[in-house]
Image 1 (cartoon, rainbow, N blue to C red):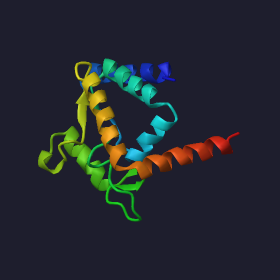
Image 2: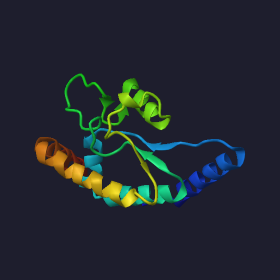
Image 3: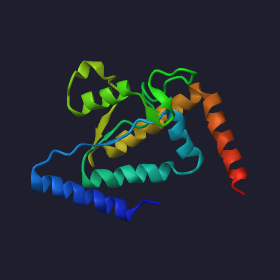
Image 4: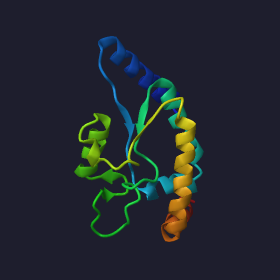
Length: 158
């Protein structure tokens, strides 16, 4: 479920920043694709999409989530972009900052970070769904791993 309290708090922050002349930049972090896949297998993907829709009703939001060249890094012992599925390395943080502040834009992959607005949110969400389908086709083993982990979690919680 979406938290009305969270959305109200965000609106208050946006309003305060506007009143005080503060430029606010809001973004969604780039967790690994397997993290996003876990939202799908637990049935929470539609809630995640609705959350994004609600956010952009309040303020533009930079979206680094989804299935892009950073978040779909192959899983191995030593990863370039991630410490684990939800904690990215400093280099990825630098890419986020570069995108947010239009600094060294040539260093940021073209597919990494989209500024969502009410005008483009639906097309952006559709693009992420398509990218997820492409990723799933080429990574059936990871899709199965996430599904298996979800089943084990459900069994353990019974």
